[in-house]
Length: 118
Length: 116
Image (cartoon, rainbow over all chains, first blue to last red):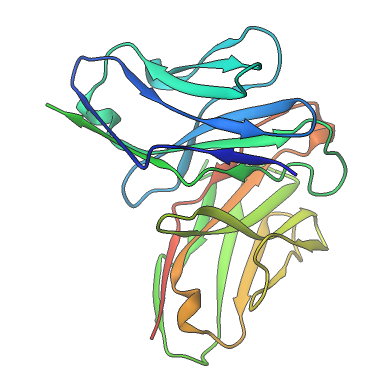
């Protein structure tokens, strides 16, 4: 079974400060990891993914995430937050050993609401 | 290139009524999915399809049916709506794993359904 946890329902950060949105995961094998962002009344948009290789992954809009296998974490980060980054952020995981029909089923976290304060 | 389009965007139903949500994608994706999003519960997979003519159950399939008669369309049906089905429904699509692309899901903008 695979699962993902986002321990914070909400994160508040001042504009210009660094931000971190936390994610931990559980899979039997090795993970594929994703971050998505949802702006109000919109669908989810892909931000970045970790498949293999470098533990630091860079994505859209200046976001990056660090894969830490020993801590089973995949925290989302940005060096300097913008008010426009305020949104709902979802972490998702898939066990790479899953294959065949439905292998693209992702398990999503419950989401973290990021509020960037001007 | 529209991506993933869902219709309708809003709908109010009475308990026991039926309806169909339509999802259309123009990216030639093999896989398609229906999720529901509820406050504090994230996204939960209802049904999915790995190709034209095939469907499978996800995490919360009860009370829903789906069909994929054409590759680009994935329909979600509620035969007898219940208040517990009040939610925001998202359709998504993706490449298959056999495409060599370990890729992301592409989401529609959602359909907000209220069952009274």
